[in-house]
Picture (cartoon, one colour):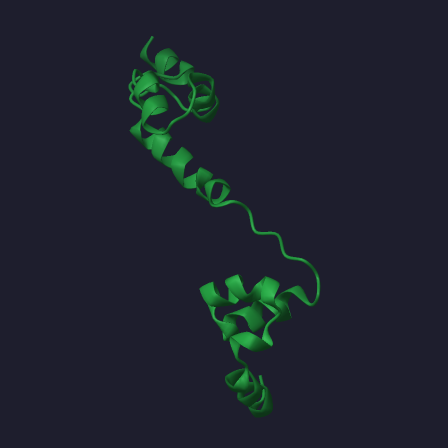
Length: 107
């Protein structure tokens, strides 16, 4: 960003921004809004819902808190159904349960 562009950004006010974009500018500020505008280059930018952004962190927590017996509690805590909890845990081993290779080594 050259000096002239920095000066123009400093002189830009919220009134210079189209009304439909002002709520975004109020959240991120004019300088960051121009940065996003530069990134998009005139294309529309899609922002997923916050719930969608938080799903990976929620699923990691569920896997970490899973003890082999608490699927109902996890469903209640995270406001999910049992099938949703089971889908999140489908590849998760039951804590304390041996896998086949461990079992075969014991015999």
